[in-house]
Length: 204
Image (cartoon, rainbow, N blue to C red; front, side, top):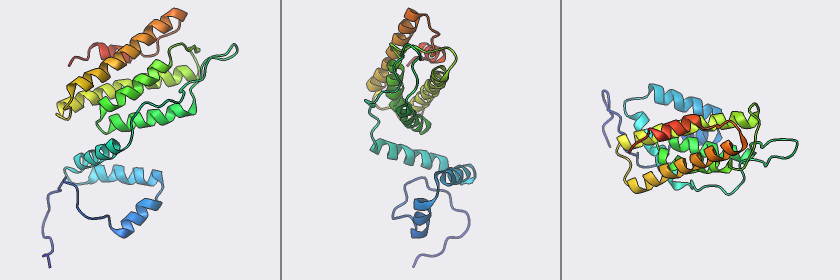
């Protein structure tokens, strides 16, 4: 029988073998999303050294198992004579996925989703003040965070396929360029200014 542990034990970031304790697993299965978020944040803020790294490694492993393909559903409604374009409910699902990816340090994986959203705005019209303009401003900020996550991904040495990484970056740049030309054609206010600047000065 193993001897009991004594003294301080350095946290091991390697995946633990075996299964989650039955009672803990029961709690996880029944706790609310808000409770799990609060517990996770507390654990990450107060846990032993290495726990954040272990958490993000586990998060990336999980996200790689689930699809990050671009959705075929519409993100925005078409403008009519009486109303401008508006965000559709499915947009939030895709933004949630993109945020999960870049938040876990998978910035490049999120760029394709964000590029598809930017490209979906081409041909649309919207008022400068309204729900559409507001959500586009949020998406502009998301792109900036995704680019920062991508830079950190490179710095951490987690990018192994630089060709695919550059392809993702160029796809986003092309989508933003298409949006610039389109918005200019109808005299609107370009909504992705920060994203365009971030891409312009991003060299790798």
